[in-house]
Image (cartoon, rainbow, N blue to C red; front, top):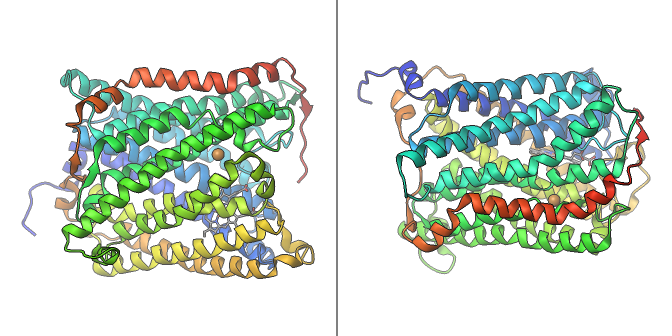
Length: 562
Ligand code: HEM
Ligand SMILES: [Cu+2]
């Protein structure tokens, strides 16, 4: 390596957003590690093995299965996913545009996330908010939980501002040009999240906060759930799209090829802006007090929002096939072998995508109104979403360590670390597939989700076989998790730095078609217009039901049943 004059502190002086991104990323990985520790115990529970006496000895603050499950859901699905989104969807557009985000506000967003997390963690750890990560009233947690969670989530509104501000600055310098691809994805993404987050913000401000502070006596559970699921569906796209941005913008290059279509990538993101939010009743098919006609409308809209993921499947598969053929791959399927299976940054998201195929199929089942009555609130549901968020999203994040960490810190990945990474992502993938099989199957046999079933070992004799899969998956995942912790620490804690790695560009893929496809790209670039359409769709899909619910409020008192 040539001798360089720059030091790491000079790199950080020129690119302070690297440090900010690193802080978001590391905090996110701490969250997913702590949250996932409960996972294998839950998987054992779904094999009728009660390992909680052991867990309580290891972690004496844990009072119950359900406190552990609350921590698992909150830390993995809310905290980790959001911090990863804030890292990726601010850093990538900043590097693409060559602009610095407003650093003061950048750090404000990090501190809001950190302090909100700390505040919410106190009642979670002291067993004063064992209400799961959906916190449905009338289950009543400690006020610090709702306040901390609110501050944590509001930190994303600062991220929204950071990206819109960079976009505005870029447009002022480049009048008449279309938005660059990754920035387009990020802008559309953050606008989608703004519309999506309003439901949860309303639920908190109007009900949960005043209620937990003792200012109002009760909450109407139906209104609370309706506002919750306004956000609760699109939040999964908020988890997913940072991974998609990596899959579109970076993975094709790591595969040795190019992205086959820039306009198709934009169209997928635009459809997510339009369709992510007005679909939440698919989480309320079993709720009373919501008109079946509206449930049907949301069911159809939910099928539409599957379209951009199906498009993504084609665009990415074509890009990977192209990469393989550029590397000399031949035959109908033989090309698959020529892909870089020795690179964990490639392998992790691709395995995640494989698991996403049955994951997406299950999602279409859940969305099909009456079919949901077969699987609703059974173990099928966690089977489904572990393929999505614990599979594709988490694997893509794990894989990003192998290009993003060197880019942020200058710390190199050694050959041994790369091989360990390969073992981690394969084990994680295999474990998730086995567990998902067990959970889907047990769900079809009527085993409920969110249940300490190991305490009633004779209750579900019909599910003896699938439960074996749960325990096998759980053990594989425990090994994967421990190796992941070791691997992450060994990369982060090494003292070696190669400044050139941190100075290198983000490995954005080249595109084959576009943005010279001017007409469609220009139409999609009218982002203000599409944002307005998205708002109108939400008002149409939610307005009538919410007006009716708000004019018939039936607040009920809170309960603490743990
Ligand atoms: C070691 C890896 C993991 C294992 C073994 C595991 C296992 C499980 C099991 C068995 C359940 C069902 C518990 C129940 O319904 O009573 C569950 C719930 C859940 N898991 Fe995981 N999980 C893991 C990692 C993750 C990750 C990485 C995420 C998200 C990024 C995640 C998100 C969730 C969520 C949101 C729930 C639902 C919590 C609730 O119902 O309140 N899990 N997990
Ligand atoms: Cu949903």
